[in-house]
Image 1 (cartoon, rainbow, N blue to C red):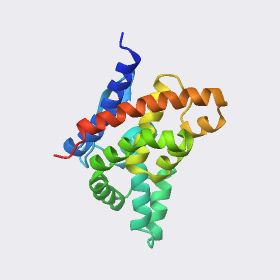
Image 2: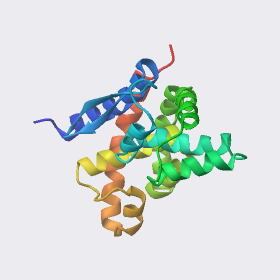
Image 3: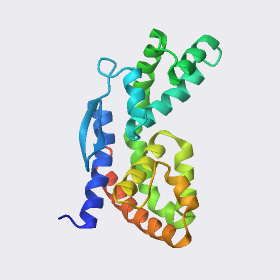
Length: 209
């Protein structure tokens, strides 16, 4: 039986490795049945928009990439009403993605990974001090609002807290804002402990060569 410190360290390591592998090997892992066992290849040959849409509903990298694509498509085609309508219909399960949408997705998925490793490491290192200085809920609200690597850190922490039964449901921030003061302190202590391990693992695994 692993100690809680060992569990935190292992989980933090896997979160950091997931980012590293995504950037370096073009694939990611998702968390299933207590471990990072499900391996999904991220490439235009292996996962199209329809498949990514399924993974986006499970959190993790799939959700981050989906949200990034949603943002970038709206910017890229903001003057093209037809494309925006196609995208809206696809998200609402009213149609299949067009070839143009698939091509845009492939381009965005490449740019998505640019600087991801460096930026994830940077914001993981800052997380413990931000929690101490600003409080857990404000810090996580800030991370969630920024998207991409900070949103991934938010989801990594959310996944850990769910896995250890500190929170219920799929909305960490909402849960924090509706928790009583005593339980919020418990969650904050655990979040700070995990974030320290995330910081250490990011320093070791994501350092610039």
